[in-house]
Amino acid sequence: MYEDLVDQGYNQVQLVGIGKSQHMNSINNWTSNSNVGVCADQSPYMTWNNWGAVQRDLFILDSQGDIVYHENITNGFSSNEVSNLVISLIPETTTCDEIEELYDSLHAGEYTNCEFDNDCVAVWGHCDVGLGECHYSVNEEEYPQDEINNLVNTWNDEECMTWVCDCSAEPYAQCLDGTCTSAYCMSENPAGCFQTGCDEGYECVTLEEECVPSSCFCDEFYGDWFCTEDCGGGTCYSTQVLGDINNDTQINVLDVVLLVGFILGNEIPDDIQYFSADINSDGSLNVLDVVSLVGIILGN
Image (cartoon, rainbow, N blue to C red; front, side, top):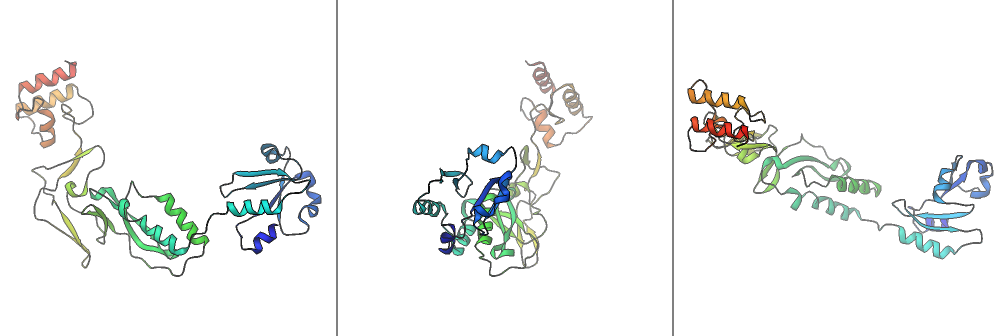
């Protein structure tokens, strides 16, 4: 029956014998001198015990390794029934064109949506085995890496490769019009965080003492970034909590000392510190902010 299935083109079917090690000397009686593989289950015979097997039991496993059939065949079995079951368990073959179409779809659409540059990441395609392009820019959180890897394995198993590629270095992944796009300027985008985004725990703010362009675009001919001539791009700073003036994640007497120093003119706050020190949000730093800050510390 096994050889008949193979002759019909069902090469995915594998027949394996699992015998107790004490019986391996009589292996020829099992295989009728064929090339079927036989594994020795060593004492205390964990495989036999775990499967509840007895002599001449037939097990059929699906492609996931799960047992779907278990019968003792000492008195024979229906070869048609077993053959039909085995054939029904064989996954449908996917064509090379279908694999390529699905691969491309997993690098487009919802997998490329973005708001900022830091939503995007450049990934290598698999044209080294003839599948896809050199590079893609995708949403880092949405990219289905495991599904991609499974497709590549199927592509190789089906021997679909007909060509390979020669690729340049990985590009910068830029968010343009809500879509992750490959920008072949090899340096980081110099635009501010209102275009590129900030990591979690940081906010994008505009500071008077810093001049960061609000928008930059890659000229792939020259490989350089060209930016707008303004200073409103913003810079990422750790998210500041009102009252945590020194940004050490605690509100305590150190913040009071710093605030008093600002009020007396001993120190000059930057924009972020000023925001955090203006406890009552009246636009000025004075004794009222000190009173409010002390109240926060005392839990009032």
